[in-house]
Image (cartoon, rainbow, N blue to C red; front, top):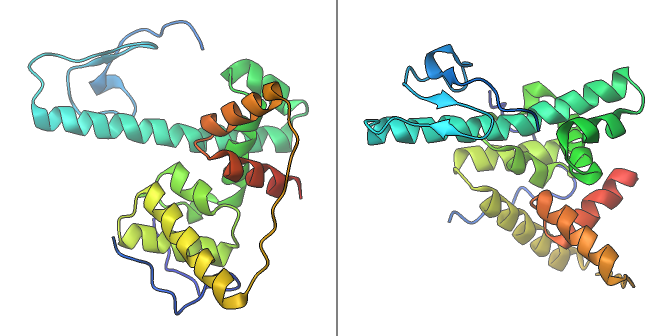
Length: 218
């Protein structure tokens, strides 16, 4: 459910108009017995490592099935994030156990949990992806709502949302004459490779990934 946009605060100028531009294989489950997310009334079976689709499936049904599969994939990011937040509140040693269960690395799990904490379920836009929300997670709630509302109304992709935010920030920096700060890091090749891999798994550039890690530590 999309909430109405809130008045933008610091960092968002109302005068700026965005440019429009591991487990064992599960027993096969028929779609009529599957969860509501995948249930289409179609004759297919899903296993841990395979989706079996009948040859007579129509193009329309094939498209619908793909949309539902992508919805499950995106929902799983929220589910893992909520699962981790619950573990944080209820149990100790949560991330070590989580990594053992999910086979995901520590930073990826932290990113899922970080975004889930930033957005209560009532503020999550079901017409946008988890990655849309990750793009604005570091902003204030007012700014988050401002940009997500635009993304919903204008049907922006994650990349378009990122471009619009960066364009806005660039305009503000010129208007406010904000000082640019450059950081120089000396890293060995092994550490740099690990950081790049962590950024790739989080679907972030290395610079954005480093920024998110630093923001989380504050």
